[in-house]
Image (cartoon, rainbow, N blue to C red; front, top):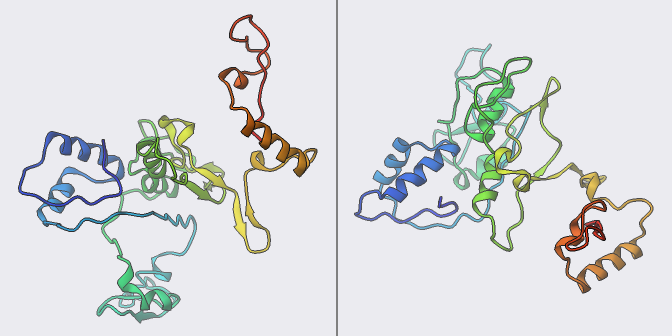
Length: 263
């Protein structure tokens, strides 16, 4: 299996066949064999547990000029409109719009080596979400060969399936689009809809969290009725034929199956 969430200790043994297979699986996340060998050669000895990962996907958000790389020494037609400010790390500057992050630069790392060779936003977005260009589609263009890879969150959901107490991979905000085209790579794809992100439609301080329509209480159902349904489900475990639609045959006589609403 692929190890996610732990950095393993370094020992004197060479890479095993299992380890090399794990690196092959990591290629979906953009990690290649040379990268892995380089990290092994660094001799990391500490073991750390990854608690959680938050991906802030700023689709249409601020550019490098307004965040981590204002390019203060570039020509006026290249550098950003805002000043650069020093951080707690000598030689490292950020945009003046990020004073708090400038003070806390010891708590994060900037990865400047991530890049791709595509100019289209949709294609670049698919690469960023899946680690691969397969199936990506430019605005109004022809899709790249191959099937779209699962999103990184869906991949982690698949690899950690069966674990209890883990909150599912969650997205906040609507599906990302450009010029009416849906950005590919936001779902589980070939892993199945069961590993799609649980998507919240959005959040504002005025309205709070907006959940999907399917999870909202129907207008005709009162809170008391909903509580009664919950009590009934808790008192009697669901049986397999409870989940059959009305037209599906029962387990013995070819009828009698009934649908159960999960709400």
